[in-house]
Image (tube, rainbow, N blue to C red; front, side, top):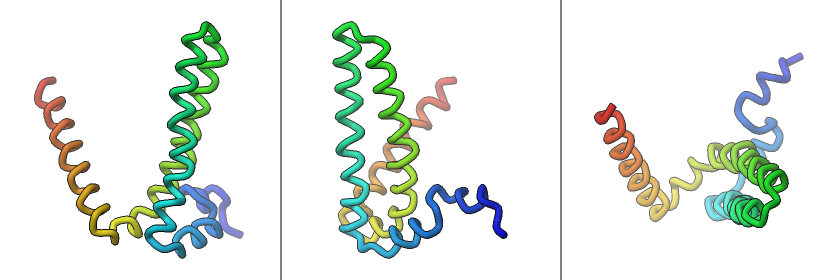
Length: 112
């Protein structure tokens, strides 16, 4: 019997991972955009709730939103990224993002 922790090491259960990998590039994009479209506005709402004086509720909401982003969106993106890179416009956008991120990280490394 396989070790359950090794099955989860890739971020998604194997059966779900196979299903997601079988999607086309635009279906994969939609799969990432839907939860992102739900999680990101929740972070803004959490800030507004905390700003209204509900610090505990706002804090719990923002922690939950970040956890959902980390546990769901990031793992989904890691699985669908190869499919997304088959879209020429996404591949160009991704290369640009990685280049900008590398330059920014380089600036911080030089300054310390």
